Length: 197
Ligand SMILES: [Zn+2]
Image (cartoon, rainbow, N blue to C red; front, side, top):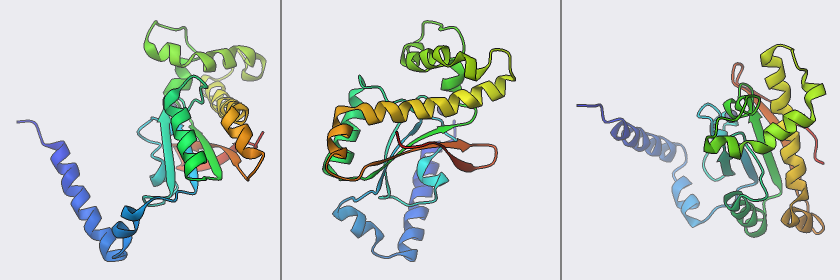
């Protein structure tokens, strides 16, 4: 019989809920009343870059959207819905786009497309790599080239965000700050790589 891994997760959840309640008896009653996250986080789906874990916050702090290679695509109704609700309804003022070193999605955009769905999804990154080929270098160390494209990709997504009609409209009347970060899996550290456009 295969091990019941989801059963293990549920058991871990029970232990976690008991621990959190012991630390803060009102935590779940407070969360159940509603959410007031202060930051909207757009990150990569990669399992190693778990947003709440890497910035050490509990539930309720981050409004999260994740996809392959942390892209902001104006044709993505999922992301646009998250932005509409998070910025428009919840009034969030900080938006983070977080890439990460060794991103498999960004790396794939440096290769020839193979006809998979993800190749279509990554088209903007492939176009970015082509348009910034001089900066990336053609025959540098593969890791350095990938690292540079990871950072350029984050900056590119910030520009796309800043250009969205919703973001432009909100920014005329209230604070809305955009932050570009990269997570280094090998050290566990975040760094800023792009300024608010
Ligand atoms: Zn990734």
